Image (cartoon, rainbow, N blue to C red; front, top):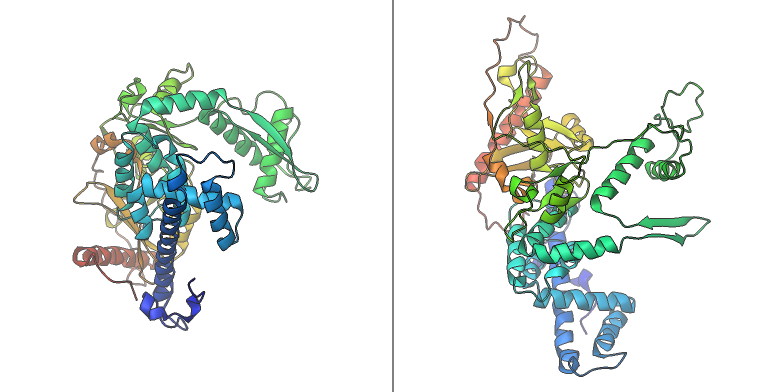
Length: 498
């Protein structure tokens, strides 16, 4: 047995700083990032050991062991005893170890190298279960690993969408069969919970689930800011009101409250817009192996077959995206045109802040280089490269804080990529996966360069050389330029940042 003495090891021998007392902010953040990569390496080591246990204890008996408590059970029992986890948890570790060894060896290398977190292994293994034993399993493993090796950050939902996109493209027939089976097995259930509560659940098609969720969220929001309930509690009450067609009211106890609520009568929540993004071939029902899946806003990637079914609905409204479009509204160069607004949301899918899972369809479009309202020719223009989707929280973090974000077109790939720089100058790459991966046709969409703004009227010289806002904009522009220059000369094989 190994000595259980991690604390006795020399931190510097593991690439860690000897002390963190009074360390600079960037050193502390980099230490956390490096330690997270170390956790991934240790998890890879644990899975590798579990896989070898399987080789030694299970494989010799696998073809002949008919016992109820077979060799796999006994192997998992050893793991659960040593790690002090349940038998089910031990079997889960063993199952994932085998999947990484036999089905996803390239993904396992990404875990070893710290490119993904241990939690992502559960997502990748679970969502590639369909390809186990197929002729294209190695291709799926290779494509997922190639995506994980891109420079950029991953949120949970972007990771999920990337995996689904790759799986759906390789075998749409198998996906179709699973979808039909899943739809036939849709269900509804209720379970008793503690303290007089209960759990309510249902399975349904993704588009129906989005409609239900939208209705609940819309009704839950029909209260004023003084309502004492949490968002979850309001949503629970809204679902009950919709199901029973009973009144839903704000609970602020203010007699002058103007929140609309709901009386339970007909006429509310009768229509919803559910956005589905796809290309023309998929919408026409082309479900060939190299066809592109669709993206259902509020859910994620859906199969080409599912897209075709939704396009055939009588209430479906199809709005093609033109290849050439104006970038801004004719009367207001600050406001993006409807085509550019749609394009950016299709491209970004989620908030572009690293790790954020909030969808961009209900978020803001932010000018990366700030638009100068007083002197438009001195600020960021309204273009596809200079607009990025952000949730309201991260938009405010940038606006009212000292974070700097940047966005540019990558020379070798033509993709629009982004970065976020912390107030101390630490550059964090933006999302590694976006709408270009699901809809390659986005690369063919272009926008006309905005017309130059009219000359600014003469202004009285201010008492400052320039406004505080202009200073902030200039600092951010200088920071972006500095980051770009640094990227051009950066050594890709740098040691840990300490």
